[in-house]
Length: 351
Image (tube, rainbow, N blue to C red; front, side, top):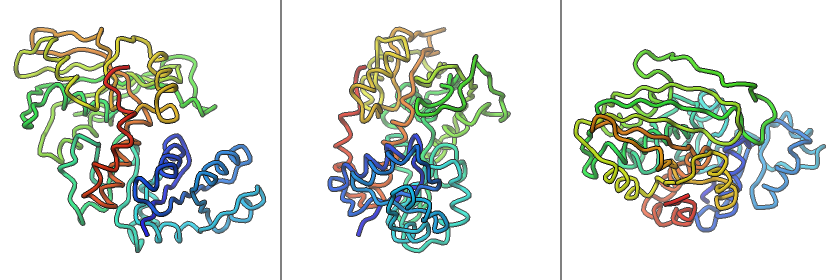
């Protein structure tokens, strides 16, 4: 049996479980299981809906009775669910801890994935960026990079690299303007913009570091630097980018390059709420799966070779697509590109 087990039911875990359950036949999955750590009456409806859609609940053994008191019927215990799975997808902020405690010695799974914050979990991966770097039977642990890292990476690939892989990027600067919290969260909202520090001497924040390490898997050593600021909004992350090339470029070529990259959407909209609203109405449960949404009206060329502009980040959506792609690669690499076609409807040319 091909079994996919998801750990965590947060902003990535919940839509991922639903996506897998809704499309398990198309993806070639026999069973979808998921682990929830904390029994909460406020999340009873969420868990029951995932179960109704075909996912199977697993819980820690010492909390099973509490889940049952809420009306749930968990079928598996934590380690049991992990070891019977073919692929395990960790969507928690403690993926590295789970790796040390459960994953590295688990028998059964052929692959494990963790999400954005879990630096060091395994080889970094983003769909359409470094698929060629994946090595069958060697890359048992993959780190799906964060949503803003997806945005940075696809802009570099689309605008600074040729189809044959030639790199023209001399310097890349990125300002990640992050939403305060997800619309599903009550805590963490802020009253005003809060700036972040530059903890990494070479890269600034982890966003550039992660994008650099992502491209390292292909043999590149990029000169990039990022900063971050958190804004008092719940809508979308936004990104200001400056890419200095080793050659001249004009706006027509920039637009042509963006149009040629199927993972970049463009828009004439200038506000995050309008792009977010489009995703709510036309995405998968509100998620756009394009890796970046570039605001065309903001594009400019400075000194002939510096590309400047703004791009919106479809948080949740772009890691979801990469996660599904990696899962299919683990399950059956020969049919992965065909099976993922069902999600192409959520990759937009224009928003």
